[in-house]
Length: 237
Image (cartoon, rainbow, N blue to C red; front, side):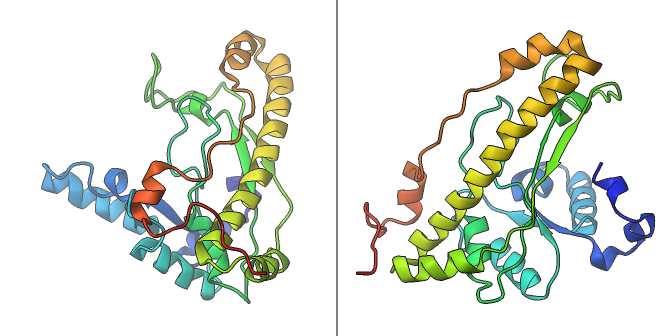
């Protein structure tokens, strides 16, 4: 597990812990009708170095600005690029904030460490008959990819595209493709482990698998947030 892969002493060094992007609605504003609960949640997630992201406001928001500044200071920023809990195992489009975080740190592009995992929904299910019940008898499979240096990619995109959003989208799609390949790999490995450790779960797991498909690059919300963005990419000639 990731927890045990780090020295035990690391967990007592708060300044070296990761920052993480989290939904403001869930992590900070869920109980606005209860000031005491809201105060506790704010304290809890702030202590956990959570950066509140406001969905639907685009990539040029304070949360992404703050994450970029942390990266410029060589700090560790962790994020879930799907931006939500994937309840139905869909192939969700990555949020473009990750592309901006890479682009705006150029020429000192941060090293990225891609991670794909499966099985966490069985440990503490957020839905279904066992909702919010801990289970210690379900396998978790985690694959850690090779560290990524995207400096060359950023340089190529700066030459290819004139629009910053095109550059950001291309970076995001590149990372999305990497994680998608890792997801296919982790699903295969997890199935093999289930056959060995939990054969009773194999049928349910296979039924929940969603065949690969690539989601749309841009949604209607994208054009609502960026109404001046052209329908076709602008390339340098």
